[in-house]
Length: 118
Image (cartoon, rainbow, N blue to C red; front, side, top):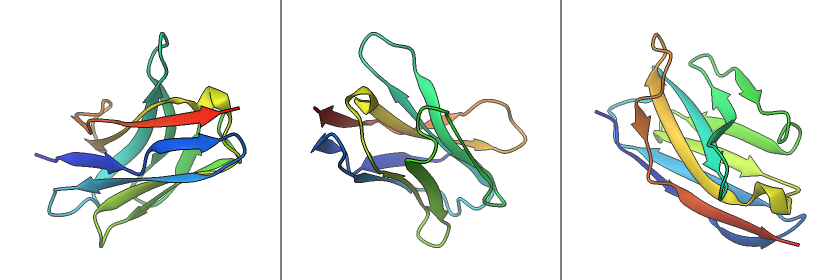
């Protein structure tokens, strides 16, 4: 079992920056594939960024060049650095983890609210 706890959300003006953290309770996160998702009011949950065991990353087109996902295996923590924030980035952000041989994410955090004002 892996428990995930996000932190770092809040309110920021457009153009600002914010860093989200996701602390994991597992003995190690190095063998997990991890990701950030978000869900805005009235919209479906969407994938924002993901990182696999070797550190390779991928991003949604809407955040490419502005967001950076990273992991610190020693601290068992996943990060999402968000720069040049836009009002459309407003959402609840969730971190997720999966065993890399599985297709779906089985472990989810409770979410943290990010609000970007214009």
